[in-house]
Length: 378
Image (cartoon, rainbow, N blue to C red; front, side, top):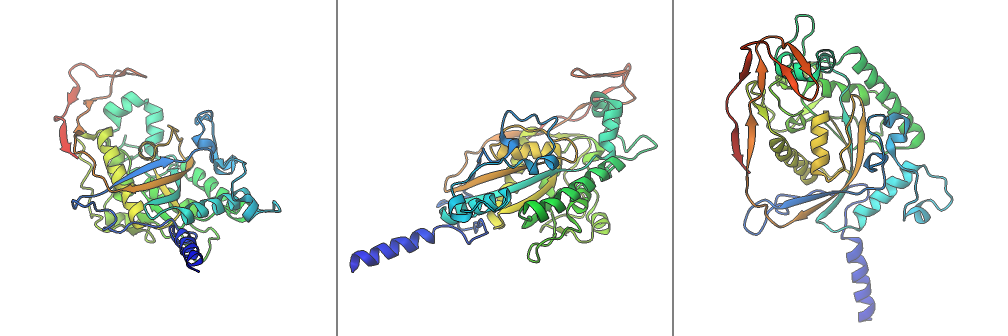
């Protein structure tokens, strides 16, 4: 009798280790605090072998997620015999079931989430950089408001960018109805207009499940790398709300942009630091398994770095999914000091030439280097 009771207890405890079906769990402040009262460390791992985008053999320059079922690889899962013994379910249905079992069977310090990361459609700043060349854009044109014809401060989408969003919306309509892709349970967006508009045009109007509406949240730290160029300065909160009234703002979102400086740019180390902060925030406070993040090329590159994913560049309007394992460890990271901000060389008048891989050549006496680097302890 005692043996039976122990067996039942062990059976119940094993089934109660993980998370509610369809959820990946979240960690409360107590779980994220070490015995010394400091913040615990979240370690991220990309689980490869499920998407073409995590295969080093995939050519990112020509890859189109809308033509490849979001890159989901046609393969079997360990749960297929249990869930789909007759082989009638779609690839996405079988993958979703497998992910749910990962969360069901893991311990309370582990989560599995599927992040659906999309880059915004083409903005006027992208078109301008292509027109002037990257070196000339970086050293002269980018720091300006515009060129007298086009404004690229917190750039809007071009017609081509809007078309990319329309294509994304059509993909999602098909994927939801035919491929049975799980609808995101949470939506996050960069505060920059090109990104938030892309999210709105991509997901608004879809036939979504009643319990999974398109209810996006704007998060400051999902913005693009903060350069000296005006395309990286966000609009104020009042304007964003007037353009996209259905978007919510995270707690503490300020009225004005308090991060963009115009005379210094954020270093890659600082961007990685804030990327870790925003990802830790989502994994700690959002128990959704399927999460949409609409952002930027540089910020998604930083996301992938923190998440342990291989490099995979995205052209405008493209997207990348990733199955992520997160483990909350009761250890503290060693404090270090990084260089957070640094000035960039600029030209005070249009450069003489723009040489790819070498930079721009300023006209005589028009080169400027502003301010000094700023270090920040982390």
